[in-house]
Amino acid sequence: MTTFTIKTLGCKVNQFESEALEQALAHQGYTVDSGNRPADICIINTCTVTQKASMQSRQAIRQAIRANPGARILVTGCYAQTEPEAIQKIAGVHEIVGHADKSRIPEILSNTAAVPPTPFCVHGKRSTDDSRQLTVNGQQAAIPGLDLRKRGFRTRPFLKIQDGCNAFCTYCIVPHARGRSRSLPMETVLESIGRLKADGFQEIVLTGIHIGHYGLDLEPGTCLTDLLAAIESADLMKRVRISSIEPAEISDELIDRVAKSQVFCRHFHIPLQSGDNGVLKRMNRPYTRELFQNLVLGIHDRIPDAAIGADVLVGFPGESDAAFDQTLSLISSLPITYVHVFPFSPRKGTPAYGFPDQVPPAVVKARCGSIRMLGKAKKKSFYRGHIGKEAQILIEGRRDAATGLLKGLTSNYIPVMLEGEDHLKNKLAKARIIRMQGEAAMFGRISVPTQSL
Image (cartoon, rainbow, N blue to C red; front, top):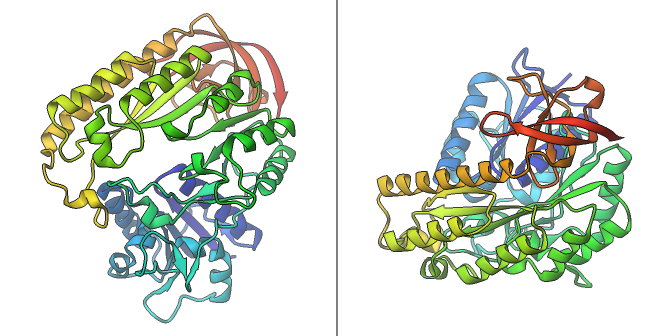
């Protein structure tokens, strides 16, 4: 019995790919490591979106080597794609697999059952001819063909419908790591959702690197709104949540579809990055603060109870006190529900790596704290505004570790703790929200259990 373990860093796309890979390996007869003894194979699915993420990826690789003596160590993910040379310097790594070959990892492991005799083997190394294209043997990589069915305790599985990015923001390494935008054909998306429905799931999360560009590369061309229409008309899933979408790619038609639908979650996550037009221009972001402001107000007007989250990148080179205040005032003035805050991290190979007027780390840290404090207040206000209201909640398969209560999520992204028996797990239920439960959740009382998984 050959055991394996997968350590995942980074985004929802990486999580999807790791879970799909776990399923594929289990299907081939490998066994997930129980943790009772060292695993035979260790896979580290890395991230490189920031310098900290790259450092954490290296730490994860070294930890896996120490914890699993004699194991075969395979490294994949964005850090493996962009900096294989750095990984080669870590003693104990046997194979480095780029994104184009990620879906071939089960085949790679089967073809070379023993640890390779050489210190390492690189699969799918990035072409140096054009960093904007993810290439293998001269061919642009397609979206990895990983399938995904049931998986452990996850109640809301991810479904990757798109990979890669064409935007090339001046601070971002991701297009260099994942290549240009590629979309999963619509019929394949629908088939995948149908299989997840057959397995009993009630909600899925559509994810990708740049899902607002979904379908533009397909023949014939299509778009995300067309995909959503097809999903809804096919009656494939009780709830569908859409992950992050760029501001300029959220159309009135898309907002109207969510507003009128009983299927699509009332939840938008929109990267802002900066509320200052000068900073946005230097970032190569294709919108203005005015567009973002009008978009958020338009969503709130059309769907008053929608959760609207935002990403903010703090400390971009040249971000003055006045520019930061523009960001702070914009978020403060809008019905934003929560904020994800990231300090600027210079990434070698991106234009911003050499930009002048770097912001001192202490200033960046203080500004991040200000945005996080504002975001925390916004979230609490949004949660409190739902006290006394009824909501449909998808109850998760695991209880809250600290309280023992059931936990679930509303369509508009409010975590709710509930009293109840285990038979309610993985069910959609209607509940009345009663009060705050600590700082980060609500407490509710179930009124009507509805659909079971």
